[in-house]
Image (cartoon, rainbow, N blue to C red; front, side):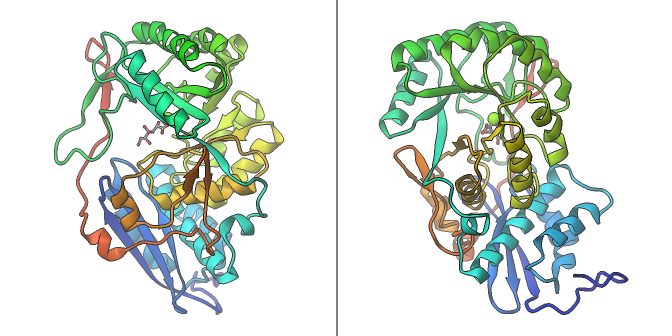
Amino acid sequence: MADPQTEAPRKATMKIQEVRTIVTCPGRNFVLLKIITDEGVYGVGDGTLNGRELAVAKALEEHIAPLLIGRDPDQIEDTWQYLFRGTYWRGGPVLNSALAAVDLALWDIKGKRAGMPLYSLLGGKTRNGAVCYTHAHGESFEEVTDRAREFIDRGFKVVRCQSAIPGIANTYGTGKASGPHGESLPLVETWEPTPYLKTVPRLFEHLRNELGDEVELFHDVHERLTPIQAAQLAKALEPHRLIFLEDPLRPEHKESFRVIRQHSTTPIGMGELFTNKWECLPLITEQLIDYIRCDLAHIGGITEAKKIATVAECYHVQTAWHGPPDIAPITHAANVHLDLAIPNFGVQEWIEHPPEVAEVIPGGPTFEDGYLTVSDAPGLGCDINEDAAKKYPYQRGYLPTTRRADGAVHDW
Ligand code: CS2
Ligand code: MG
């Protein structure tokens, strides 16, 4: 523990000697962390925040790294509390992504010291693999169906489906929005609820007719609807049996989820924009959602996710941790370690990174027949190849923004 007067670390068997932030862009930007101890053991973490990467990198370099030098890497909870509550100005996506990077790296060190994979430290395996989903998208229903079929043929048992909406330019999830965009300004997407609400149920009717009943399907609203629109959509989708409807409402309005629940039995998933456990609480304790899907890289890492999973378990809520391509394989590995250990795992989002990513960050999860697994290597099982990282310098990139047909800003 730290000295109560000075925060100077008390004598520890092992000390943090160096904290290295690595920003790299092997196809997209990642903010990686290496925490190196005086005994040579090191841990790797990920604090990538898509579109605001350097804010996290600066927070780590300038504000957090100096606080870690000399601390005992074993005391993860104390370090977590110290970094979260000890800043006074706490939380939010930037600071909690930075905190996540530290948390992941400390768990990695703990696993390496114990000689155990993380899932083992978290209580051991409750399942052999984590069933996962990926994204099928397209300009037409036929294109979405063909993509979904390719994934099903590869073994996927769950597929997220998004199609272009007639009359709307650059619809979310149809494939134009990802990756760094150089120095350019954000791509602008448009949004109108009426064509969207008409199209999505038709898409799923088409998909069920073409793909049958066995595959699990779902759809990401990306927090764009009003409560009553979300209720209408959830109700209209009932016959198509979605595993869940993802992120229907903005993260600010927890009580609005009651409106959806009052009108529909379509399961609801929510959470990639949350940055701490308290934001999840009302949705879980009121049983307004069925899947909690926070992003480990934005909520302060494994320490916070484990607590959220435990609270969710008490209320029959399952996990579906966010697993987009804009977080590094280190976070994907952390997701799967947790999925394998907790009793209330639901489904895991997973998008295959291009090969350059594995060159820089080897050791991410492995996909086989619809399931993800991780290696039995101690810790998270990932590494950072710093020489390879140098080959791919940071490129400024923005997420798209969204405007209504009349030009007004809407949620992306
Ligand atoms: C999406 C994300 O994976 C998802 O469910 O909502 O792709 C999200 O748009 C990105 O993580 C934003 O960076
Ligand atoms: Mg989403």
